Structures are given as structure tokens and as C-alpha cells.
Image (cartoon, rainbow, N blue to C red; front, top):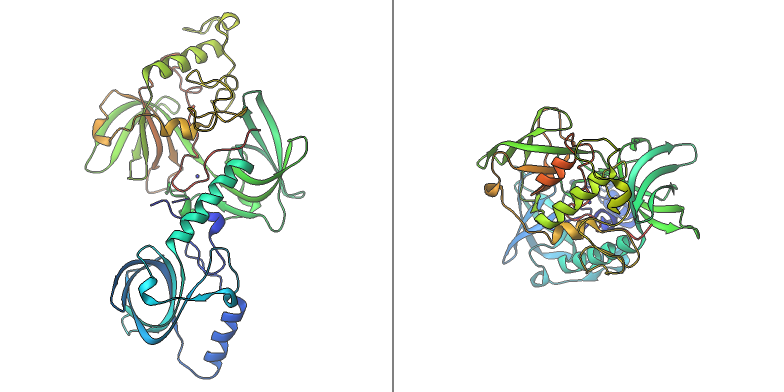
Length: 416
């Protein structure tokens, strides 16, 4: 929803976090406190990724602030720690030549007066390869034990969030239980990156939010005890392109939902795809079949064989594109006996570039919420949707995209 494919929030670790938050092991924090109590000068610390290595000089791209040149001192201590490890006693010594570009490090040492360099006395590293391996493990676990839906209710007293989940069997409510150990994160209002998500809490979750949770389900599958929850408020835009500014990286769309022109930012992280004509026609036919009798352009739902469309715009019966159950996770976006994996479906559609978009093109877009000073950033933009907008001229039923196809985000859900 984590991520360019940096580690997702669940392996934002106690020593080094992708978001830039630092949690030092107690033993290390104690040692630093003793050094300062002894009258030694305060040390500087930086957390970030290695951008370049030249001899004993490392160019560090910190999580915040300008780049820093780190000079590794001859007596410096270099330790490698595994993702998820919380104690430095389990760290292993590492040589400078073993460090690689992309590794996550925490540097401790004496900073120059202008703050542009640090003489490093200690470097703790999490190898990029270890992060990638952990990332893949987390993604697989999200697919196995993940669940997503729209928040319909929040009960702070019991720590329970009720979400509406759409599956092949229809739409149903599920209870997501939280505990003190549950990790909460929330997407930034102006970023499509999962690793830009910020620590959050249960009170921040509101009805209408998109929610993804990972944890263990009850025997009957109606409840989930969450280990981790990530939420966000996203905006759906369905309409025709008014203009495209490739140099500024923006698209202006006349939104059918708000009846207003909406400017959307397109970044390298935005996913732009074109819906194949046959799939667009199938979705349109199902939309027509789901419309109330007498609606202009509506088909006779009694003969269409189409399942109704759920309130969040996703198909509650047979998935769009003529997919059939049992195709498997790699067989066109379906899991064995589960709901359609829209992220996988989107990833298989032809990619388009911003320069390919033209005035008058019909688009469906999922964007970030945006800020008071800037519009939303496109998470997913889908073209080739003219038949869909014709079948749902007010745009209310046209939004069939899942906003969770984000950089680094957990991919897919287990079947409800």
C-alpha cells in the first residue's frame, strides 16, 4: 500500500526505521548516556541509506536533511545486524569493504562544524539484500494473512474496527480486533509511497477509510486479530481529461463525481495502465446489469448473469475480465477460491506514459488525499475506460480500482 521497492512498515525495525524514526537498543542508549555523563562531547547520529562509497568515505543520504560525507575512522566499530533484531549483542562485525550502496546504516561520530561530514566511530548496518529478503517474506505473509476493506465503524472502547469486505460471495462485515501490541500506520496525505506512511493510532481511523490488516483469523473467518494495520483516505476521480502538462507532471480531469475540474499530479511512482477493450466492455455490461430497472442504458439484470456491484464500486460476484475461480494467484489476478487480486490484474495491463494521455480520454484515478496547498498525487490511473463511464455516467459505480497497489505496499489479500 512498501518500496525504489524499499522495506515495508512491518520491518521498519527497532534499530533503523525506513520512516526515519530511531529506536536505539537499551544497552546502546545506556552506553551513550554514560559517555555524555563523563563529560565527553555529544556525538552526532545519522540514519539513512548509503549512496556511494569511495575508499573510507561514505556518502550517506539521510532520511531527512542534506547528504552527509561519512569518514570511517581506523578504530571505528562496524556491526551488521539482521532485520528485526533488537539487541546489539547479536550483531556481527563487518568490514568496510563489505558495505554496499543501498545498505541502511546508522552512523555515530563527531560532526564537522557545518554538519556536512561526520568522522564515524561506529556504523550499524542492515544489508540491502537482507531488507529485500525480509520485504518479500512480509509480502507473502500479507497475502496469506492479510485482509482489506472499507471502514464502516470504529469502537475505541473495545479496540475493534468493523470493515466491509467484498468477495466472490458478496459483501460482508468483518471485525478487526486490535491490542496494545498492534502496529498502526497511516498513509501521508501527499505521498503514494508506503514507506512514507507515518505511525498512527486507533483514534485516527475513521469510517470511510481504506484499511489493510494482517493477523490471525477466527475459526469462522468473521474476525481478525491484527498484528499490523495500515489505513488511508484516498480519493476517486472518474472523468474526461481536460489537459495534460507533461513538463509539470499534471493532468486536469473533469470529475464526474464532483462536477469540478481536478488537477492530479503524476510522479514516477504513479501507476498508469490501459484497460484492454474486451475487459472494459465486460465491466460495462456488468455495471449495466447492476443498475436499477429503467436506468438509461441498463440491461435486464435478470438475464445478464451479472453479479451486483458493491457499494465501494468493486464487483461482488464474478470478477471483471471474465476471470474464473481457481485460476491461481499467477493466473490473471485470481487466487484459488478467493477474491480477484486487483493489484495483480492492474500489473498485467499495458503500461502507458503521461505523454500518451490526450484531451478527452476517459480515466479512472485513485489519488492521495492531497493537502491544502496541493492536489492529490495519482496512485493508479487507468485509461481505456470509455465503456465503463458510459455504463455509469455519474461515475458513482465506475470506481473499480483498489487503492492499495502502492509502492512497497503489502500485495493482495487472503480470501475472505
